[in-house]
Every structure is written in C-alpha cells, then in structure tokens.
Length: 139
Length: 174
Image (spheres, each protein chain N blue to C red):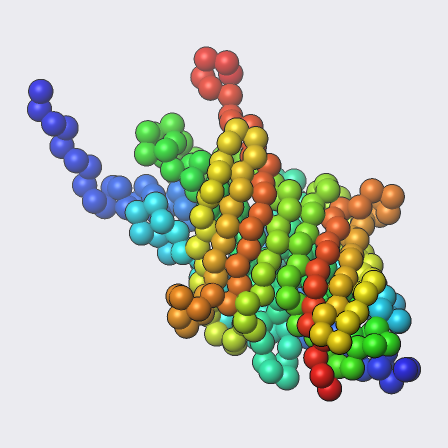
C-alpha cells in the first residue's frame, strides 16, 4: 500500500502540466488527495481584479480527482477523466494559495466516482466544487 | 437615395482583428496556455498550440484533462465576449484602440462548466468552436466542441453556464 502512495506522488509530480501550474501534492491516501497551487500572475483570468482563471482551477481539480482515484485501495493502476463538472461559487482571492481536496467516494471495476472542493485562505467558503467520473484502468 | 459606399476591406479587417486581439491579449492565462483565435467574419476557432507543458500523461503521451478543460472554458468565454463586443465595434460604440488601451467590457463569469472527455488528447494542436445556445441579460448557456486531426472526431466537448456582465451605462445615464 505504501508503494502505491509513493508511486502516485511521483506520478503527479512528473506530470508536466501539473508542474507548469506549480501544483504540490501534500496528502494522498485511501482514495483522498490534497493538492495546492500558489497564486501566479501568469494564471490570471481577469486582469482588472487579478483573479485566477477558472481554467487553472479546473486543471487542479482534474489532477486532484485523478490522484484520489489512483490512491484508492481498489484501483489497480492508472485513470483517465470520463467527465468532470465544476461549479464556481466565488472568485478566489488574488494573492492566496488555492487548495483542493478530492475524495473517491465510490469505485467499481470500471468507474470511479469523485468529489472535490477548492478553497483559499477562507476555508469556510469554497471557491469551487467538482464532481467527476474516471476510468479504472486494468494494470 | 444612393447606397453608401462600403468600407474598404482593410478598414473592416483591421477593426475586427484589433478588437479580437485586445479581448484575447488582456488575459494572461490565455497566453500561458498558448491559445490563439482564428477569425472568419464573426466566426471564431480557438487553437491550442501544442507545448510539452500541456501533457498530463507522459507515458502515453496525452494532453492533460485540465489543459483541455481550460482550453474549452477559454473558448466559451471569448466567444461570449466576442458576441457582445461585435455589434458595438461594428456600430462604432466601442473603439478597438480604446479596447487595446485596456478599456474592455466586463467578461462573463463561469457559473458551471462540464467537460466530456471523448478521446485522449494527442500531443499535437487542438481546435475548438463554441455555440451560444442562449444568451440572455443575466445568463448564457454555451456548448463547445474540440477536435484535433478530424473535425468530425471530437476529442472533447463541454457545456457551461455563465453570468453575463451588466451592460455598460449609456451616454444618457452616465
């Protein structure tokens, strides 16, 4: 089990798009993953307010959900996104780090179901939530 | 009554291209991803220029699902912004030079966005077009289709809802 966690962490950190966005994996275990991303001016979507683009939040959500699937005890190997829905509750506060927690709450032989929540410094008011389905790849 | 002479083609193209450029260049994240927009009349095609940093699975290799989601979301937002701006630049209410100087209309905000991943994204350029199914005063519903080599073989599609920015105050009310 330890091996799988280690592999998942290395896998996430070796993902070029995840490292381009500055993503850091801080927790991964038993179908749950936590990934955060520092504020970066290159990722701004609204130049007037300096708010990060929703697309960058989506990319973090997708990565974190995928990581949660791979860390699930019933997941034999890799995964790919089938579908992902993001709801944007509010703009992330400019200058603050965004942290996503994803949970793989159900898994079958072929499909993994995942939920995720993204927050900034004000953890009581989510920035965005996501729900997705992912493939379960045979090893 | 004599029909007014049509504008020279260079004037028309210059106005539309510079308005589109102002809209796109204002967003740092669009540059970060390497997205460009092709224009034919008012029709836009978004192009995601391939770069190694867009890879999500280095073993296949395949584009990152998040990069694809972001590409489709950018396409939807620019399509909505462009549809709002178009009548204003054509009527002269908006000056593309003012837009380039940073006086841009407020862009729509994403309420929700759902991406369907139909095929894995190949390590090459991707293209996307948005269809605005409904655009009201407050809300808009947009679909996006994305493909790579073959237009009829979509690699991803998306649907999203957006909160429209309130229209700018007119001269009478300002």
